[in-house]
Length: 216
Image (cartoon, rainbow, N blue to C red; front, side, top):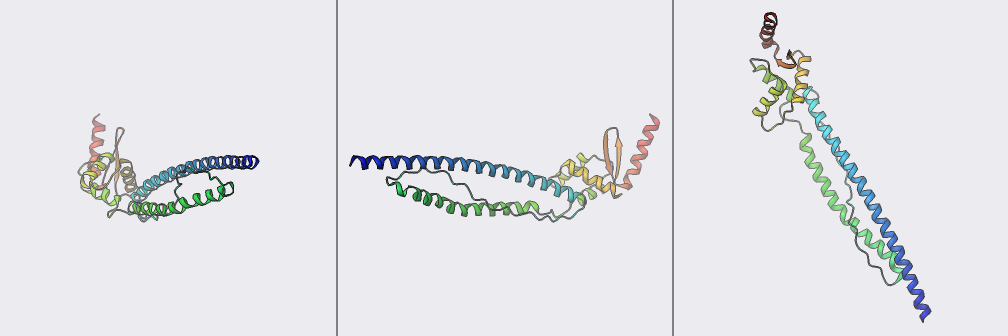
């Protein structure tokens, strides 16, 4: 009787040690996969930010406004590790662990799909082009100016006229340079500052600048 009890205790101890080792390896693998997911998510966020900047520059240069954004794939959430209870019967230890580990994966799939759908729905409005192109707003603003203005001043004026939109000085400057390349605007330089006007209104400004240089 004592020999049978001793054998059962040894088997239970062996299975307990094996289960503990498997659980430890499982947790380490979850940590590794979670780290890879976070790194990929950060890379995806950076790419989406770069895409927004490139879309704005493309619109400023008069390029096509429609941009198709790839739909993010559903990523199954990693379930939190659960504490396991070792069974008294050694033969049923592994099957019980397999049944428990498969249940959280099925439950986490549905929330992951919902989160992916929300992300794709929230990202869709960002890719939509504004009703009026930036290049048209800048051209119309230049036409109404009586004196040369810098890109920063033009960006500030456009933000005041259109508070629902964001106008970055860098993007406005690129738009102005595109208009200069198309002969729809003219660039003048005073010291280290660069000013922009329409071709019609820039001639008096150039004459005034030449007169100041001759008098100096």
